Length: 363
Image (cartoon, rainbow, N blue to C red; front, side, top):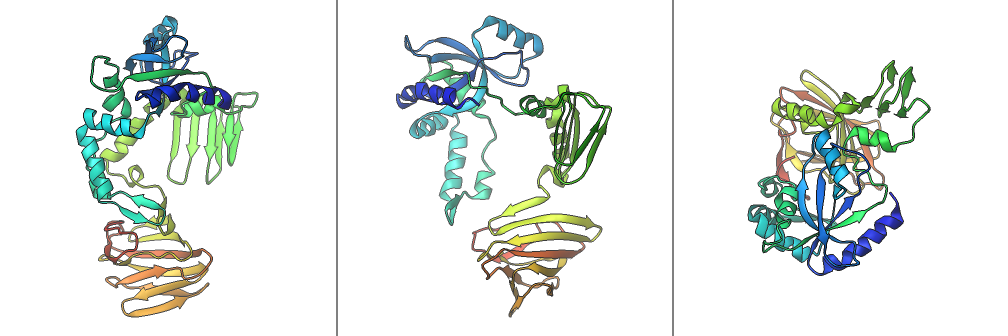
């Protein structure tokens, strides 16, 4: 992004925001892009100022409509960047979507402080209706006769890209002579205009063109560059089928550190666990699984029913099914360990918490 142009656009929008308007930034289109939303510019708010009224928002158009917008010259891409006073936003969302405002207020009021963070109440926040800022607010402020704040759009020419799809990422990254982009452990043979990314293992592509290949520890994605906007259909399928890939990454971060599910099979699961210095997991119990812990770095303080003891590097301990237990890191270096779970059910919801310094009720 052109930082100076971005800063100049922000300075142009600041007086509008300070006066009570909701400001968004529009990108001058250079192609009939079907992956972006558009904003139709109205008249100038003030003569001599590059701030326009918003006539309407348009969601991702088909190719012919996008070309018509480009030819008209009074449409800009919706960057999704906004600027407004906090008080204006709170008041506006309350008027436009009082149900969203009430749910967020409830989640905030029931939240808890965790170090430098305020963690909103999970159950309350999950009750919040799902909607985009464009649908919930911005499309409504385009009606100048409403009692809502005026919307203003500032044209922005800063080499911007939404990077909202893999094809957009391919467009902005440096390419070789064949138009290929590769990141990680990738081998390409007789390939053209292809993006290939590897995060954890070798990816080899032979004779492919205009393809996106992305490998992560969670999954592998292969899609034609013209179809990257359709990836959300796969996400919908994951959710409909109740697959874990639609809910969890293999590596999951927690307030105390993180764990990585490195292997699993019938009635067993293996995790790598890292606990931050001074941090501790909750005092908990499982109905359906036992656990075997092996410390590979650092020192663990283990609570097992009424016992409290230390486990050092290359030592292990066993937590039987139904045992109340806690894992802590009393040291000054990260605690790294391997956890082997075994049992009839290994889901993350098989946790009964008795004490938790982070105020959680469920994993």
